[in-house]
Image (cartoon, rainbow, N blue to C red; front, side):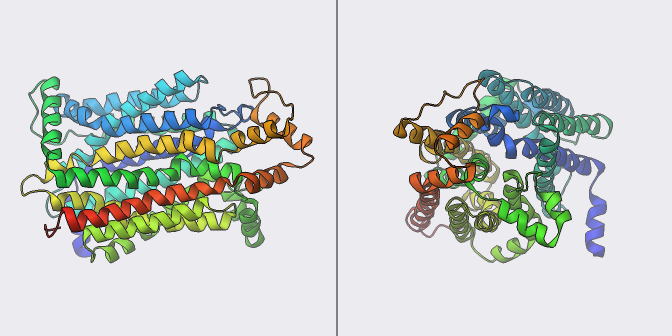
Length: 484
């Protein structure tokens, strides 16, 4: 403990300011993003937007892909104009665009404001990572980045808890006000406490810096070993992102969470009230948030176990576990099994995700590690885009409750008004239940049995299995005996 305390004393104030800003930025992002799929698609009479699943997938997939691709350019801006100045710009963009996202109702306006959120986040991401790197040294970097990773998960856990409780109490708009408020705290932190860390100022023009960045990426991608690995890992990120893109909708539409609420209420009404809704259910985002909660509790233990494995073996093992978890989460309408799937998923994530960048460093030639690391965002960006496709039109055709009910209504020749501003999704479901002489629970079970929306688990798990097989052959036949 004495040695650890000595290391903690070495961290300058700016290190802790950077971590605090990361906490609030992740609070804002995950507080919004974990419920975004629900906000975009739920019935308009709840205050949500009532978009189709395809529209949701397009917004979330393309914008988040852009977010992960933009740091290629925004990192050059920070080096050119200074960290502090660009942080202020990032936070002004983020605070204003988070707020406006909750004000607009049209597809185009929401899309554009979410793009602005992506721009602000993309400016912030490389700066905070670089700040942590420049405020640590060889003796403190390992613990420093460990603290940083822990802070990311704490922010990712706290944000959805607050947004869930707030939206059920005050409506959807408060989620975006909360996100904007968290970013306003960051504006105060950067103005009052952030000190520009020492770095050699880039005197190149912005265009020159971008050209150099692109040239570095192209140089790294000319190595087929790296390129093939990145292409394979697109599969992992496509499957991984279904946790945020699709699972909240699946839980909302199909899963019985009353049984979980009742079980918790049986031994602690106070806990049930804290984690549940006033309707006696568990909100989808609270269930999905078990992923971040599990990482906070168990990441150190899992890391200590997988550190004994070669990075490629840890990645394959982790993806295998994630595939089982995501499959179980989508294969059932039993809330307890969904929870089990999410927790299993989390353990797979803990084993594989941290090893991803480590493995890129391992296959990089000497003195080219940083060059290769710069490509790590590419499969994340493409994986987010493809996740939007699977969560959008694919989910809509296979598993979306609204779409499947419309099919059933047409098949039976029932006359129900089309969903519109004056006749909401909830009105449609209520009228369908009346004509079919059942209640909402019975309607859900009828559609579940008739259309088998759970079959989508085969697709998501298959993506993981294909990724595992590809990694196995890559390791044995592409790398051969190249040192991992």
